[in-house]
Length: 137
Image 1 (spheres, helix red, strand yellow):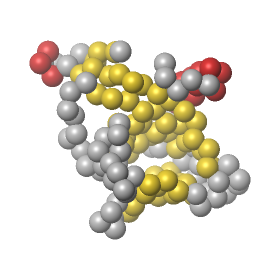
Image 2 (cartoon, helix red, strand yellow):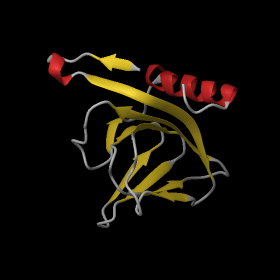
Image 3 (cartoon, helix red, strand yellow):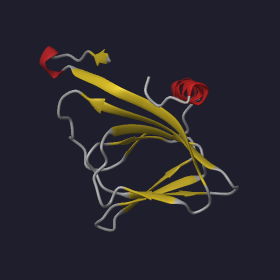
Image 4 (tube, one colour):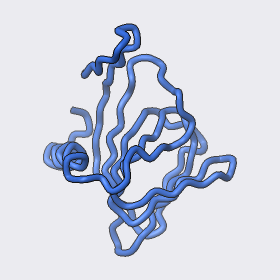
C-alpha cells in the first residue's frame, strides 16, 4: 500500500491492489465494460498505433501510440485496439484508491508521446508481472 501526500491531510489518498500487465491483442479485437462498470482505476501506456474507446451514449475517443491515459473506476466503455501488425499492445496498471474518488466520468490523456522516464514504471511493472506470472504485487 502506498500513500500519496497532498496539501490537505484529510484528502490523503491510499492506493492498493496495484496490478500491472502487458495487454496483447489481435487485429480489431475489443473488450467491453458495457454490461458492468469498470471495477478499478487504471493508467495505460499505449504501444499500438491507436486505441478507440466508445461510451454507451455513442461518444468516441481515440488515443495514440505513446499516450498515457487515465481510466477512472466506474465508467462503461468498449475499447478496440487498432494498428498494423499481428500484436497490438499496451501496458496497463490497475489500482484501487482508498476512499471514493470518482470525480471523472471519461478517459483522459495525461501525456502524449511519453518519454523514457514516464515509460519506465510501466515497463518495469510489466516485466515483473511476466517474470513472476503474478498479477498482484
